[in-house]
Length: 357
Ligand SMILES: Nc1ncnc2c1ncn2[C@@H]1O[C@H](COP(=O)(O)OP(=O)(O)OP(=O)(O)O)[C@@H](O)[C@H]1O
Ligand SMILES: [Mg+2]
Image (cartoon, rainbow, N blue to C red; front, side):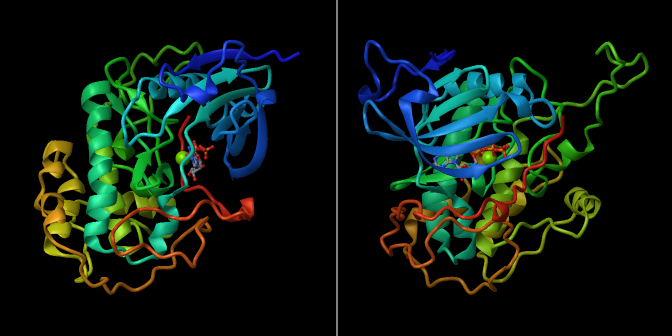
């Protein structure tokens, strides 16, 4: 007898998944394979026994919660994700818990964008198929839902048929309910204001120390910064801020200098990146300004250019899940083959994520 408790069921759940006596627990699924093994969560491709639909199950082990991810973070992830309904955001179909796990039943994407970093992608493919839809999703998040994602990076963007969808709301925050002050995200994609916001000082009873200065909060602009890093990564194959040590990387992010970009990157793309990677939060572009940037508006106006010649970067820290033999079709469709049947070894999937408690 399962001890599971349903936490959420989407009103827009696919009809095949609905029935009067529907139970939400791990027994109702067949586990096909694990595709990710993180600090506190695991991601599985599952088969729903009732409908034969393939879905994704994100599983948090309760015994592992506390150090990096707390129970409240998981509940916040469910609370934020359940409100989202957008064509460029992966859907949360249901959530349940039992004595050992919190489980999120998710729409299945083909793979994340990490594997695409190895390839030379035409600029208008990047704008049309990745950045434009991402800006739409993030504008919806910020303006309609008051949510900051806080972890935009290739690993959290999935391609689903012909489009991309934003995923992983594990670090998201509703900024109308909470002040965003916690340093969190992935260092390589983290905005400078996150790095300089000082940790809160608490006494043992959880009350701030009498003389501690209230921590400065940051804003939706942290997502704009991450989009700038992402654009740079997709165009050049590597993130702009990287140095040997953690400290060096932090310093390089906080230096108020324009990053250098190779000549293979067009002036419009450079300007887009520089507008997003502006140190001053108030001078940094808004999502609306990025949507109206000539690089984005001009994208559909020009046709496929010859591939840009960039040197192949070797900075990837995770093995691609994508079959090397596949090609991006010239018609710009983002239809890529399904996940390769052989899952890579988990050791090769080092996460770039950095979380602060
Ligand atoms: N709906 C999905 N469809 C296909 N693949 C997915 C889906 N959700 C997640 N993945 C894959 O699993 C990876 C990890 O998932 P996710 O980003 O949600 O976990 P995480 O919160 O980053 O994990 P942790 O913080 O424990 O490292 C993603 O980078 C992606 O490759
Ligand atoms: Mg993630």
